[in-house]
Length: 91
Image (cartoon, rainbow, N blue to C red):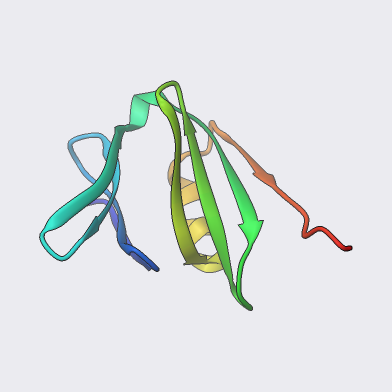
């Protein structure tokens, strides 16, 4: 395992086998090959966390409530990909 960070749904994991996944308590919520990831988007979450969207050629996957520091760790492993930060809407 190259990276494992907590999120609301379990753990966001980057596997040596070339997959990014969210797994919780003996089950995989989603898994996608790293080669299919096209970009990341973060949306404001609670205090020091964000909701991370993983855009792929297969669709969009979400990891909720990931700390900003942990997102930075993931970005450092995917330097070739763009990360977009969405702004909170004000009504």
